[in-house]
Length: 413
Ligand SMILES: [Zn+2]
Image (cartoon, rainbow, N blue to C red):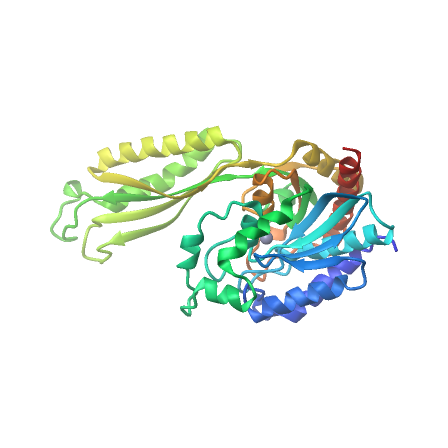
């Protein structure tokens, strides 16, 4: 049977009906609805000659044995954020079902082809994203932190995992799944406005942004809002406010898609009658180029020192989290670009702002690439998330061609 991209759209709607409600998708990992979605996914693959297993981190694997053990992986995540969209994550696995069906029906492939549904990409319940893929990639170094995580109801992460058959202490044994992996392909919605603004349905993804997150603490002096003249204040919020605006200039100077966000400022004492004594400001910076990312931080530091002096404040920095930029495989990016051109005539190469499971797989040394399909209004992680059905169909065709090219390349290697 030929590839049927329309079936992917139909099945995505079916999944949304089954596991969503009027507020959006509810497939939060380690919940009964997630289980239901995972079973549903299995039911779509039942008729195919696949081996099925769940690894130590809860990732689902379907394997179509080929003439060689070298494996091409197609992957995604069926979990969603609460009140999520109908495409984030599940598009990749449902499209991969269709592509895998086509490959299986053509007889044994020259290489092994596997579909993986990563467990808990979103980290929506416990705040730790990329759970299953980081376990498989061997980069889950934070097991002690994970043991201490609780959800809003006070349930500990290890207990929730155990209910779903996963032993946290053993999760990193999932690493063996990537042995023999020769390529990893992932289709995802863009979750941003770039492709739509260019009026292009599809793009080849160059890699994922490096991310650095800091807490910047400004210290001034609390003082009475009525009795303290304006020129005698040491207002910690003034430092934070100046930096928030300076981020735009830094992004312009660094260029190349630099993004900097001050996502929150907590002021103390935080009352209407006092000048702000301390302002704790959150900063997130992203770039595809490690050197540019370092330059951004240098410029932020320089700006902070300048504003501290101007406002007579003290300023301190705490690094919260970081991940280096991850560049996808050049050959596979070329294949993705070619596949997109074949299907829609024009392609565009773009970086990914959000992290994806593909970043973990790539970090583990497996040649990786992603295809993005246009997101309407750039919205995601909301029930308003949407993509035109005809674009989804084009995306499935492009993924199919990318898989063909990749299989041929791995078979020839
Ligand atoms: Zn996703």
